[in-house]
Length: 266
Image 1: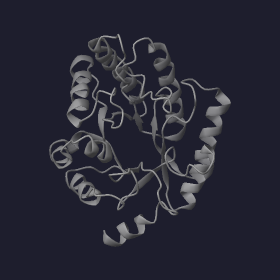
Image 2: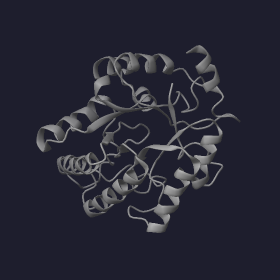
Image 3: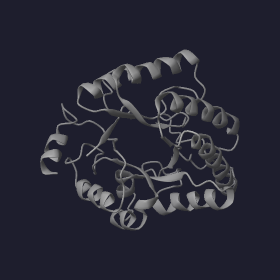
């Protein structure tokens, strides 16, 4: 099984630029990140330092989020955020530049929360335009834009796979862009009450990426009740060939100890 370590939620005892080397030391050849900067368009030296940290560690950056706003403050993306269109457009250019330098192919675009006083249709219409623009931009890299249902944020409107797939269908039908794919985060889908086995059975061909964490708790696989191994196996049987993103909160001294057991049982 091929895993990629989400170095934004894991290895948080280390500075963010030291985490790729730590992932490599732990036995992994790939990492993914949420947006690792505080603004949509960071200074070039910040971008260069991030790229160097990945290259010097000898790991592949398999995935990168677009800027999502103030995540600790509750923001969950700019894709549907009316009034921040220029900021998102500027961020696309930076994301593509990083992807070009590091060979990254998958780019997660968090949709954004519902805004008080803003028409929901206007937000959704903007999201379709922004996702199409992002999809066209990463197409030159052979890349995909990922759209993700998220839990824990009531104002975030994409809760189920069906919610995200409906927007993805609009991007294809209205804009002719077909490289926007579902990010199937089994943790988020499960805690939102989605029928994960049904999603896998019916939509694996539309998965652009899989991420995992156990529930309850969002900890390591094996700390909760989700049949993550079975779900991954079913997705692979259905044709999924990508890496599995480890996007969980460390609850143990060695947050990767479970992988030894998983490998032994494979």
